[in-house]
Amino acid sequence: MNVLAITQARIGSTRLPGKVLKKVDNKTLLEIHIDRILKSIFIDKLVVATTNNKEDESIVEIASKCNVSISRGSEMDVLDRFYKAAEPFKPKWIVRLTSDCPLIDPSLIDEVIKFAIDKGLDYCSNTLVERYPDGQDVEVFKYEALESAWKESKLLSEREHVTPYIKKNSSFFGKKRFSSDNYPCSENYNNVRLTIDEKEDYEVIKILIKELGLNASWTEYTNYYVSHKDVSSINSIFIRNQGYYKSLENEQNI
Image (cartoon, rainbow, N blue to C red; front, side):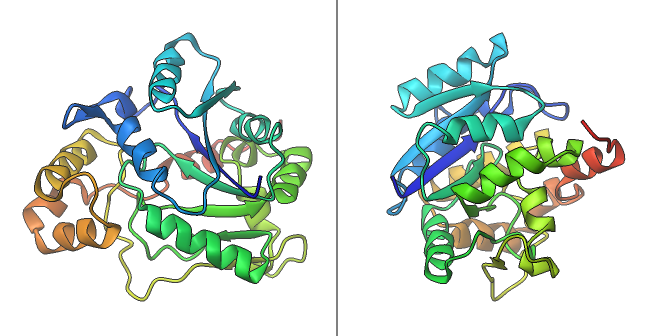
């Protein structure tokens, strides 16, 4: 296999429990997320990586309904869960996605994949410089880089968020362990929230889908968000990557 996509999904969430089960147009946000990923041209297989918790049986049921593979593992050691999801396939390239991005754009996914492959990078994303909307996060890396991170990562933040070890030790930050680069964006949409972390985000997602449907591009959703201040004002108060910053505050070796 050449390109394996893995998306993380679980029911537990301190800010918005059960967020991926919330529905729009009679579809759960997880189904919408999966359906959009499956429109990618370059992804050969998609795996939903969830936890061993009983409450996440509903994630398994949705993934089965969507005819995609499931892998289950640790709730807190997400790096281990992620690696175990990839290990049976040993792909050349891995695409990391998360289910709090229900409106992820398949064309953008393919652009980042092509950029990474063409440049032969160990790691590539459109988030090293955060100019894309929150909720359009794509990471692409080699299986070998993931395996190295799995073996070598010791910090809680590195285990809970999968890729910090790779990024911190990459050429983008002046290190030599992994070659890396950022997939650029010509405009800065850092303040646009197309993610689902808060109840206000859910209200925004519902409006965007009602007005633009389930198959719009990230630019169409973004332009609507930016041009309708009554919409952007609903969730614009929240900061990006709050979960990762929380991990750093509670940093420890494991």
